[in-house]
Length: 422
Image (cartoon, rainbow, N blue to C red; front, side, top):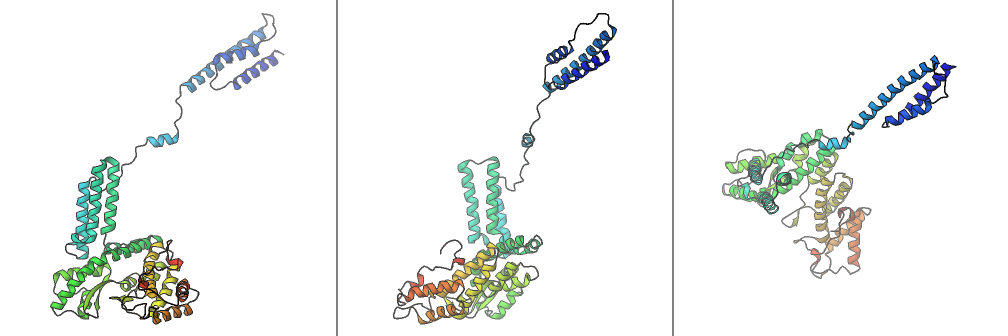
């Protein structure tokens, strides 16, 4: 019987411990033990009773010490810090900015101008509008730095942005052309981006080179070299006898341009879309291929005159519409949209030496017929539908037009408005 009572006391003691909170008071634990340990009085000399009491006391003391130690441990342990807080305390890696101050930015600008001039074979490249625009970027940055008192990371970030803008202005077509192969390895998106940047720079640098072509024409004329044969020599990179022009010719061809001999006796520099198509035929993307197939025949007028028939001009508009609608890359599409708008304007308004207005003040008959042929041949295209709207508008006015008709606002088809009505 005494064994049973002893077991009941032990079970009661165990339950008291299990119900004790982690950060509890040892005094309360003891009280709970004493409460459950109370029993009816027994004879003082009962040995089983005394033995059980002593055993309970020893175990109680051990449990009290264990609970007290646990309480102290929990009390003194520092609270865990959130992982985010630990992450925030990690020192931020310092960015490796190329340019540390405005003086270094100016030094970088001069080096970039020199490099671009050498790659193009252009003497005094620093006098070009591109170089002047880049110098303007550096000057604006210096003014901003002084005005706002930029220092530290804010200054370094601004200088880096200025450096990037300078690069955008002065990076040569040749550098971007050389990067096409590497971009191709990275996928269609990377290739299209590199391709469109290359085309943009070909267009941006072209006026600077065309200024030189007039000097080349003069030199060739003075030395009896003004001929298609001279242009052929230039395009092959052969020597003409003039070191400056030979150097320029090398830069022109390597950048992606070619020389063209105008029938009226002039040497011109043009973008070689045909040469680019041949160079990139094994790796160009679908969008680049569509683009180059159209741009190979980019010339449709010269010196204010059409050099293709009005019918071919109308057909080219339909080709451009189909191409623009099928191209996915926005940057490549942008280049074709600009071409389309220029051609559409000429098709609709005529040009200086081919007036849209006859002597009676009416829409010229040849222009009217040009529109009707396009509407009849391609009635479902947006180009033809927009031309029809213009035709019907003038028809309601008996085709009477004013002197300023050629300069009237042109409303392009929706696909060519690029989000805004032109």
